[in-house]
Amino acid sequence: MNIPPEFLAKKNLLLHPEPFLWLVEIRGPDDTPLVAPDGSDTILRITPNEEPIVFGVDPNTGIAHAWSPWKIRFGEILQDAEGNVNSIPVEVTNVLGVTMRLLRDNNFLRDAVVYLHLVHLAFLDNPSAKYTVRATVVDSSADYETATFNLSSFDFMNFDVPQRLVLRTCGHNYRDDDCGFVGDPGNATLGDCDLTFEACELRGDEEASVGLPVIHPRNFGGAFALPIGPITVG
Image (cartoon, rainbow, N blue to C red; front, side):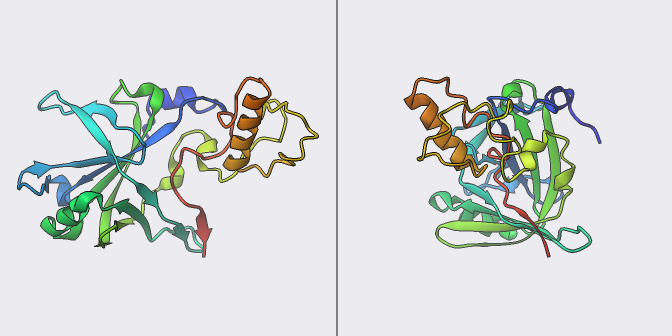
């Protein structure tokens, strides 16, 4: 597996203030362009990030790729007892009907190719600093608010990135050196930490209120940057 050297440099760092980002690239079957609502060729590049992302360059035009913020939610990944994944649902908001028009004009994205790029925020200026998996659209559906695409399986768990990206709860021991929280242990409002991202945010609020350095939820040792649901073995 060819892992970018930038990932290898980061893979053993448990704490870092900048997250990894998902970039979702949708093309037509056999990597052909999609048909845009105006009839032109297009490749849909979207991200669940709240702000637009600029990453990568078109080799033919030299123009940087812009990734538009859309509400994207990865559904629950289901595995059978042998660890096989049949399909992965991806739900996107039907922005101003754009998704519905793309579906209609592109055979409802049947057999469309989807590339999922994982990119670290610190390396957006390096087009090679990404890890990519390829899937295809098995089927799709849409209404006025959302569109759902079922993707063929891919080897999601083979991402060679920090383990914190695939944990559902914090992997630190509360108040140890990795956690770093030193707030009042007798604070009844905080109580004991349940190791969730929300609990980590609460401790950051406490740090700010008493004048401590605000290092939470930056120190969260779990997968807050990863918009994928839990893996269920059925």
